[in-house]
Length: 333
Image 1 (cartoon, rainbow, N blue to C red):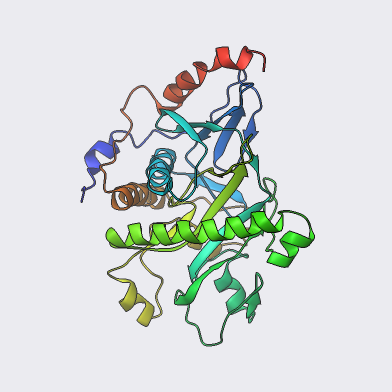
Image 2: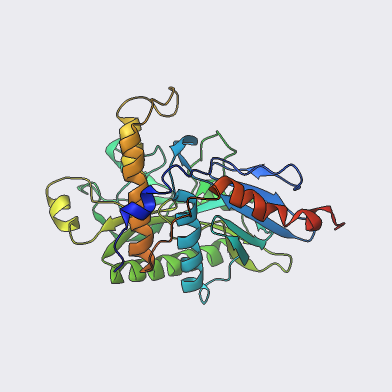
């Protein structure tokens, strides 16, 4: 298993990609983490920034985070292509993926194998509030926080606009509102559970537990269902270290994780993260989180993380990569 070279990482610790805005590229859409462009030829450019988002807002910027997410997603897409095709066409930069432009389906699919989470839509938050029926599922009494469920469940939400809150949905909600057709819902549910099973098996090989994850699906021009965005990354998923999980569960302690819950928990302990101003996050916590993302990359993929070179700055490198699409952007559809 690769070992983190903190000295190499420290040489690029100042490198943070806050945004990638190129006025010469069309169809800009800014997500919480990604800056996206739609080219006239049907391709979509997705730039993964170092923004860390939670509670439907950006909390801070974490060095290497965008490169880690893009790299883990690339590896995971390759490991699951036999289950579901994805949107990927090319990787012109460590922070950029070029994919097919899809008609994104208006339902976000979260598969959960454990009673976990910190946000308002998490099943643990609802469970602690006394709810036993959620997302069309019924959970039994007596479950401990972070305990495994009898079987993985799908907890879908609406896809909220930037700054708005995701809304929990049931299967009946999805079908009665016409968000998906019955055949689409069946296909997505079956595919999501198969992807999650593959992700859990791969994680177990690395000494990790994949507790839950999020999937986004879309339809291409031919109507084929494809995975979009990212898959099995530390942002879209909750990973725990398997070796310490039993002891920490028995002690009622939070599992050792590879996700952004550390910063989420720090913020949530100091304010109402949905309404209050976010307090300044200590630099040492940001650096610790950066190293955690790098460790997650190496543990999940089994590959050594190659940090950005000290020069050119990541911002300049990404903008140079985007400039290569200017001709395609000016061509007629």
